[in-house]
Structure formats: structure tokens, C-alpha cells
Image (tube, rainbow, N blue to C red; front, side, top):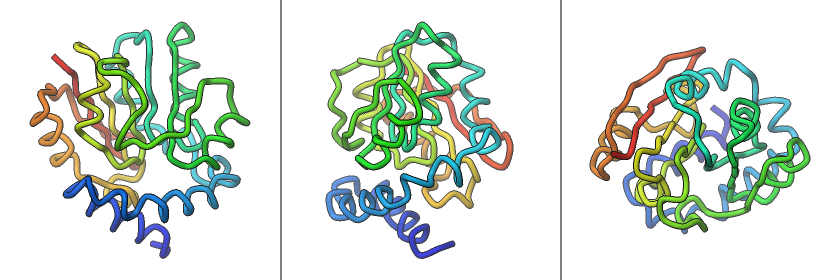
Amino acid sequence: MTLGQRFARLVTQVVVRAPFLWRVFRRGMTRQFDRLAPEWDETRVSRERLAPMIAALDAVGEPSNALDVGTGSGAVARFLAERWPEAEVTGIDVSAGMVEEARRLGGERYDVGDASALPYGDAAFDLVTLNNMIPFFDELARVTAPGGHVAIAYSMGPRTPIWVPLERVRAELERRGFLHVADFEAGSGVALLARQP
């Protein structure tokens, strides 16, 4: 792993255990992703890396509105809009550089914002996706509508720099009332799908 990837792994491990510490690391992570934004889509996005997320989404009915948290250059948001053209798709990322790149690459709605305090109403989305993203579980529970789904994927499994073991993801979601739907393995990664009752 590079120094930046090690930093991302450290931040993930700390913030999942103590979400309030995100404020300590947010600026450093944001700067790192702002620097990576111009080359992100070309060097780190591929159909194979999206395979775990796609596998999870294959088990979801058609949403009317979807939120891609930590959208980066918008690859998952663009996939959602392509798959469900009638759905309203929003991507959000803390990195203004990534959001600028996402806007350049696609026409979906993208917002600059913090996943630890999402700027959307309660129960606003019937599908929420996170691909290689630190999950802020309380916010996921807040913005996911009753009957809505959350899909969380890590494109390289445990080798993903931003990685939370699926057992931990499942336990944190279940503590907040989500029902576990299924785990998926695809390409070299894994994903988990959960549903609000």
C-alpha cells in the first residue's frame, strides 16, 4: 500500500470505531482525494471494480430515488442512472475536486457534502450506495426510507484501502434496525445488501 492508502486505512479503522474523530481527519482525506480526482476515473474505476456493487444492486427492485455516498468521480451514480433511468440519482462527496470530476463525466446531480452529516431529510432515499467508502451508520439509517436498501461494496475486499469487514458492517446496520439481505462476492471484491423494515 502507498502512504496515502495506509492513511485511508488508518482513518477508516479509527472513524468506524469513533465517528466523532472524523473531524480530525476530514481535511487530510479531502485534500488527498482532491489531488487524486483528475486521474481517478482513468486509473481506479473499471467494470470489474464495480462488480461487487453491481451484484448487490441485482438484488434490488427499481428505486425512485437513490443516493451514492462518497461518489468520487461518480461511477456508481452513473451506473444507477443508466440502470434505472426513471430514478432520481444524487451523488455526494466531501471532495470538491471529485464532485467537479463527476460533473464533468456525467449529468447526474452531484453535491459537495459530508457523509457524517448528510444534507438531506430523514427517510429521503429508497436506495443508498457506498462503494469503497467509510460508512457513517447513523446517517445511513436516518436517510434510508422504510423498505429502502443500503448497498455497501469494497472493490478489492480486504485489500481495499477503505475497508470495513462485512461482519462489522452487518452488525452496525442491524444495531440500527436494518435487516440483512445478502452478502456478495464478485470480481475481487465483496458487498453487502441490507434493508430498512
